[in-house]
Length: 351
Image 1 (cartoon, helix red, strand yellow):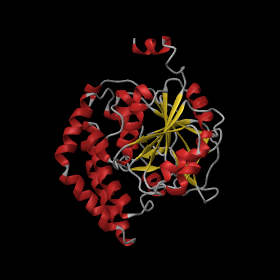
Image 2: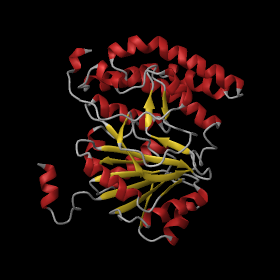
Image 3: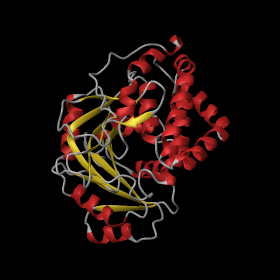
Image 4: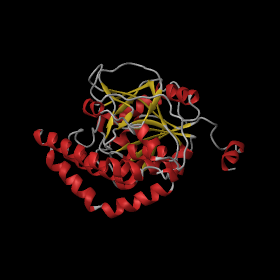
């Protein structure tokens, strides 16, 4: 009924309109490049919402002064990526939300390709794209997020050779650095989990889409060049390591269906220990251990979130397991895992 009302109201946007949301914090010169690329799209968005998480470098204000068509939304504090996107989504008017990191630079036809892909796959309401490494020609930053059977997620193809625009497919979840999602789906799921602050919030969202019986697609001919963690000191920084370690554990506890949870819990513990052993050799163990301890200290809240999430699940543990990769070499090598769309359905009572 609400959807029909929107269609009949001349003040509302037409079907297929897109609100782009960029969350910025100390984003520097990358932000202007990101926004300029978005304003030059062959399929212009309805609006570009720039959420400023209380930056002190002046980059959001400078971008709005010099680039036309940007709406500045002041968060008033550093809310993190998850809450920043949620704030932007509450202001959005489009049928679709396109999320773009401030250090991601969209090809001119990025949005056009994503919307064309959405038209090819009308039963899918969330899409990722092909992310290349900015400044490293021919290298992937990611081609769909992958969930391994032990419950350790990774960005498919990170650092590997860019295969080019391969066929569309289905990934476990779409990377929040550059994704497209139906606004009504985002709202129905409650948006991003703000307790995650940033890192793995996109995996959590994709997991919840799957638990609700949906899927995430990947459109490889839609391309962005991505720097990655530019505002937080890089992918291997203490900040990124802490939040990555903490949030991986929380996402596993919160989302893994019951039968799959107990079957894979030992694998998750072993995989985490192996990961920590590798990080120890790289001198990066301390912030990861701190993140793991924070996750365990927050276990009551994670279990409460689990009860809420599992209460609305409509698929079985088996259906979730089918969407994962069971090959440990995929995880070790960060291989791309893109599948044909699955047959979906089932009952939460099946375990």
